Image 1: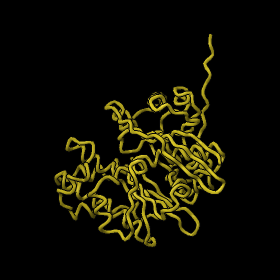
Image 2: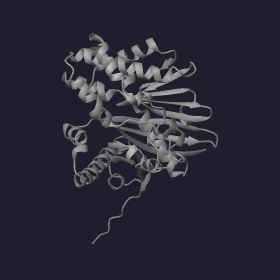
Image 3: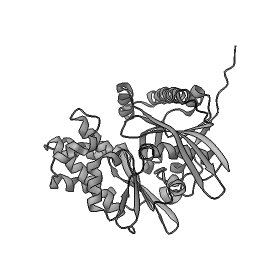
Image 4: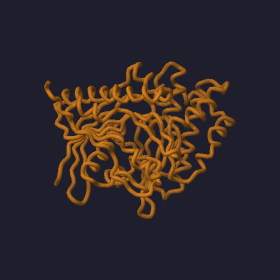
Length: 358
């Protein structure tokens, strides 16, 4: 049995920080096994929240500088994590942080320079898992389904509720997956108006009332009628929902209640055409009790929320897995999911640069 010790890094659109997971993978020529040995979340400082949230306004030169600075930051926090727990990873796999995602224009950008991470940690690093797929005409997203297939095969449906909610399942021997709707990115934006990073357990949403008119407006978008493959980026929130929310005269609690109902509705609409089965739910939204209650009240599926390690760090775990597959020269991005012309073994590999003494 072959073993791989890997660190996975994930930064999502909800800007709640960097998820780090140190994972032991093993393979017995039939299936993959994993153990999350250590994991943690490094919250963003106000500086990094501002830099990342405003990065889409920066010039090409400014973005190039931010890419390197953010890579050094990721390398520094990863090195501290390794030293704190006395870990021995052979590889770091980093998603980076998405600034632009415009696959219809053949363009996606995740910053967090891989060479800077490798140099800061002294460990081989793989990043940029999306670009190759986009160059083949694919969405470059979602990327998690390859992990759902190999690591969570006992669950016919896998739902992740992060900044964006996405779903993954097998159909006729092919993995199907897509982004459903904005989720925590929308809810957190509203919670910020109350002075909170997020609506803990949906407590404020629960106190509000669903506004039917706003609910209908949020649901009335051509994206929800599109067939997969399809994906969402920050642009959808900035260009569509941001304006709708800001022009509303409703209370924040009513806005949160309506947004929560919208998210639950879209999730159920996207999954209830499937055969009744177990649905694994992970991501920050799995901890939002009110949102989960609303999904459970409408869905025919058995909702399964795993232990906290899987709930919180499934994406970091799977990016570590994507790194292993790339290192082994195996497929890690599925064209059945993204719509690309072919599957890919995607990612860019960076070795540690040797410093030459002058």
